[in-house]
Image (cartoon, each protein chain N blue to C red):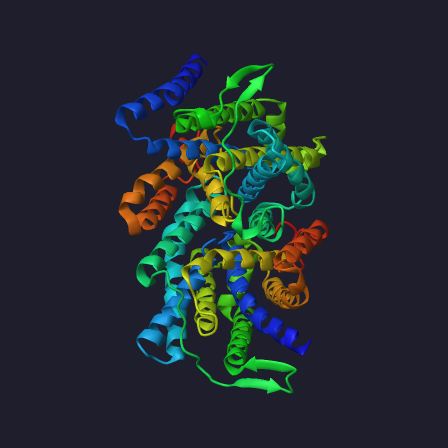
Length: 289
Length: 322
């Protein structure tokens, strides 16, 4: 039991980080970022290149991933999303753009890093063992703690800094925020960069444990969509809750349902449908946010 | 009006006569497979377009294509039903499932609906892997070619296995189905149902307040959409003679949606044109080998920057800014 809970917490912390970036971009721009999974994979590959190929310390790789993805996110927002949002008749047009960017990033990853599964050597050795009731490698604990620290840092940024306040205002009501003197263009860019940076950070964290490969992008996006549906799209607390709930459900499902074969995700989806029938906006979302 | 009929006639002539003649003349028999795929995918995107028409973003068409494919495959291999009967059966099965799934999820809107349909695609794939009737990851293979279609003893379509050129036959079958689907779609859009759908697209609460049965309408539109999805999946299975859980995955669902976007959401012919441009373009780009995806996605992004309302918006004279 302790083992299941610990696994769930560890998975949940990472999932929550992925969902946070996605939900931030969604709340600010009303864009469903299909490329989020690809950004995550890209971040993983950047860390891999710096740590495993150039032999630099892990923290350098992690920071490089974050910076690289933040720059990429800012450029994507300024040069792609902004003109399309201005010109298109329907909001959904941005989905085509996002999907195009997802394909583009897939192509870039394929050309730059190849299609092999990549990983970096363990950053900490040893296994934490509590009476055989709870066994967890130290590097997983470290990654889990780092993920939670990043989530805490992100919440603090959103709550207490001027940038965070501006972004929260923007998420609540774009026009009102603009009238109050918030530089909408600037904070949209910062928000997108921040969301992409979170995806890069998770990629950098996870490459040390599960590694990355080209095919991970799509499924990761699907999982992230599920999380923000559970929690409610566009709400930060919802993304965190959704991430931890999905992590827990996966951890419990993989243990309890293992005898019936590979049906964990089937069960999760079925319960999600029932849940959404009663609460379409998720746990904490605004109706039709 | 006359101009429209002329255009329609030219289109029918092109797909039924010109294309086979040109292919026979140039000897590019491989193009048949590409064009058949375009026609079938266009049927699927017609369905997606209809859900766009009621204001829902549908990224779950791959799920219904996969379901339809499996229904057709299972009926043919395990029950021994003729292919021609499995075709409507696959469509109706998908329509029924979509009513069951649609009742709860069609209450969702915007990205919520988009996301749950995307998840549905993934779940259908997982179900196909887990169930026993679908034979898991091994899939169903060596499905027989469509047999002869006879009505009152008169052979209307001969057995595909005895044909000298089944590629041409499949092409004609797919194109005929496509033309029929788009005729149905055009009819729906220009009927009372189409007007009601447009009212849903613009404002669901307002439509409901003046007495439009929104819950019934959106489930109906979704069911028709899924029928198209199942149909295209079933024919795909007949052509490839095999189906696997990965035959239609998340990428395919996303592609169905992209085809609609590229063609233009305001035009009945939009999804057809979009499918043709993207699928055919992708096929032509295969000469670029490893840069194929890079060029394709760059072209898509560029297209979006230049024509965010779809290719057909070029001809939209009334079109103004948002």
